[in-house]
Length: 131
Image 1 (cartoon, rainbow, N blue to C red):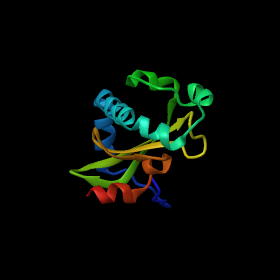
Image 2: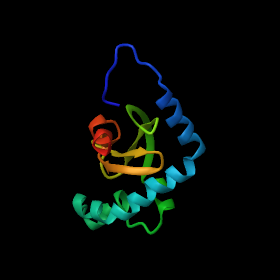
Image 3: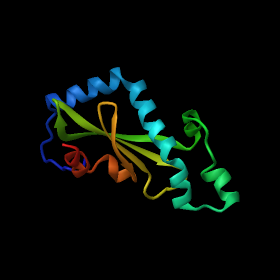
Image 4: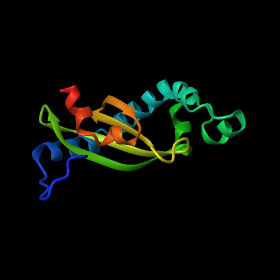
């Protein structure tokens, strides 16, 4: 995350978060893309691409599987913020519609805490607000 440490330490909370994400990856995948699908029309309005550009950059989607050609996972952040002995995890994506800011989700287990630009995935204060 955004907490820079000279001597990083892997904690029990990090290990627990990693184990959770590896054993519940499908639930996390579904939660992230379901949230994106619910917010996508708002994002289309916010970005406001012209109709011709929108067809390529930010086309309409009807199901979560259609995002596979529009976004790609680039980073997974295990934060130094935890709850119930499990660290918060941020997922950072590249996306067709915003090369500069990308897309990010903050999670705890398979619960979406917040989403927004890529920085949402690694800013500790996003996780701390959920505490």
